[in-house]
Length: 432
Image (cartoon, rainbow, N blue to C red; front, side, top):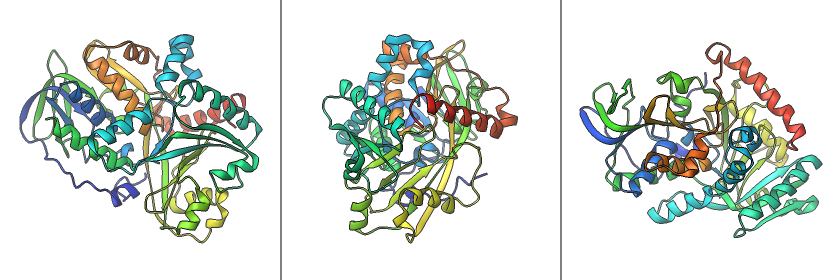
């Protein structure tokens, strides 16, 4: 099992010296949130901006301990991996509406950074990268689709030698530049949002794991030394649910992603790697993703493409992938490598809604590896549902999510089978 206590680029470069007390008494609230990552903090902040400020957030460890602090920091378009997988749930019109919603993420993040003066190193510039002609055709279609719903930002297809305008690698034959996307320091973004949330009057407690939840008209969440009684509850634990709610536990399965960070690189080398100082990913079913940081480092991440496993040496494993893309970095030192679990759904689409028969117990989970940007979209919609409801909330909660049988005993086998099927499907949808 990979250690989740190891340092990451984000913890090493955090700018907000925030800490919150442990809950040690019984309190009342309008809303209690379990989970102090992007989902929990952002939903609470969306509620606070609408006047619901008597909210309590309970975090088992520290804010950003989970996927929020263990990611690539990519700001990219989209929700989920393949919207075709949810067509049967939402229909053609619903699919179109979700695609339109999926382009909102970067704008939500940028507006929040501007409103609260959050110091999170936001940088515009994203490149979707293709290796072959099938992927080039997909990127050409994406160019049309993205432009149809986003006339504001520069979006253009690049082929052949043009690709070098944005990425210094011979590995790719095509690219789609999307200047509305980019990258961000995800932990500093979260901490800035948490500071804004507390400024609205909400309360946050760290090192306060939920141990028991009693449902009813008023829901009680007990921790080791205290409790919260509230009218509404939000489960926002994602890959760290730890079987606390059986109905939610049955609908996702944890896989792992891994990242590494190079030593600081000279300006001329950064310019060669990324003329736009941007973020990038290929478009395969299981992607490699990377970006440059404010400190002139290259952050590179991936997951195992077929066989579910945890590499013994994360630095060596990630470095080998990096050198396939940037062979001229062979003498560059790797300073840090880390990883962690991510909750994955059967259809690779996020899950929101209420528990069966419990209309005041809400949940959000299952980002399937794409959480930084989609979480800001999903949580805006979820907050609408927790208030007066909305058509967008009803649409997203209507997506059907299957139980994943055998996950507790056959996790590696199920994930290996799922990744293999996912990769094979890429040949038919232009992503391999």
